[in-house]
Image (cartoon, rainbow, N blue to C red):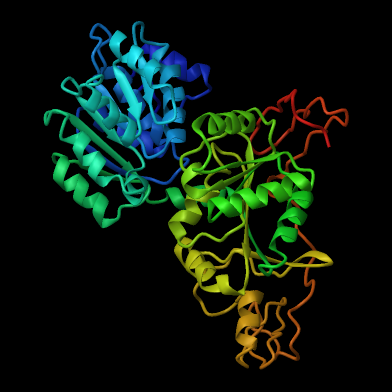
Length: 482
C-alpha cells in the first residue's frame, strides 16, 4: 500500500498529517500527488469527498519557498465557503513550514485586512474570482511570481458564469506555471479551458469514485405530493433523528420558507443561501460545525464544497435535476469511511428526474411512501435502473391515470388499468385504483449506529458510538437536548 511517506513528503508535513490521523492517501491523492511533485500539469476528475483538497495542497506546501514573501501559488474557487474550507486545511499544513503565510480573498470579508496581509507578504493565495480581480485591479496583488495555479471545482466555476473572470486571472499568471485543474465533471467548456491554458496535462480520472461514495450511503426515495412534502420531511427527521443534516432546496426563497417552518416545529435549524451577508453565512456554518444546529437548509451553490464532519443525513427536499447534482448533494454524508443516509422526496412530476438519477448511478433506490398514517416501505431497493421492471409507486400513479399503470405496492400492480407490479418484479394484475399501502415494515438505519443519549437538560449531546466508522462521540456543550 502506498503511503504519504513513500511519496517523499517532508517529515514536518508527515507529522502534521499523522496528527490529524491521516496516514494513507485516497486514490485521487495517490495518483495526483506524484505527478504534481514532478511538476506536471494535471486534469483531475473525481467526485466530492475524495480528498481532492489535500491532493493539490500537499505538493504546493512542498514546493513553496518560505524565504520569499511574494505569492507563489494561487487557488481559485467558485464560492466563499469553499475558499474558507481550503484555507483552513492550508493553515493546518502551513504550521509545518516556518514563515509560511496563507491568505483567503473572498467577497464580504474586510478588504482592508486582506490588503494589510498582502502588504506583509503571503506565499499562498486562495480566493474567489471577483475578489481576486478586485485586488489585481487595485494593484494590491500581483501574480508575476506565481508558479502553481489551481482551478478547483472548475465545472461549478464555469456553471456560475465565471469563465471571463477566470480567463482574465489566468492571463496574468506566467505561462511557465504549473496548472492543476480539479473538477467533478468534465463538460465541454471545462475541456476547452484546459486545452487553451494547460501544457500536455496528465489526465487523472477516479472512475470508481462515485460508486465508492454512494456505496457508503443508504439512499431512500420518499414518494409524496407537493402538498404534504413538508409533513413528510418533518416525519422523516423525527424518525431518523439525525446528528447533523443538510436539507437541499431549489431556490433561496424555498430554503428560507422551509427553515422558518422547521424552526416553528421546534428544530435547531438555519438557512444558507446567497442572499445572506458573508458574516451571517460564516456564523451559520460555525454553528453547524459546532453542532449547535442540527439542520442546515441550503441551496446547491451555497453548499458546494462544504465538508463538515459528522453529517449523518442529506435530505433532498427538492429533487436534483441531474445525476451530478445528486451525487454532489448526497456526498455531504458518508465521508471518510463513515455511513450516511440520503433521503429524496419525489412527487409524481419528479418521476422522470428520478428515473434519470437511477440510470446515472446504475441502481434502483429504496422506496418508501408518505401518507397521513406515516411512512411505509414500498420495496425494491438497490436494483439496477432502466430495466423496465420494479417501477416506483409515483410512476404507477401517473400511469394509472392513463389506464396502464405500474403499481408501487410490493409485487402488486395498483394502477387502475392493471399492469406489472412494482419493486419486486412481476406482480399481479392491478385490481383497483389505490395508491398502495404498507407493504413491508420499515428498515432500521444502516450501519448499526448506536445513538448516544441526549441530555434532557440541554447541556449537549453525549458520545455516539458508530461501530462501522469508529467515530468518537463529541460533547457539544451548546446543543439543546431533546
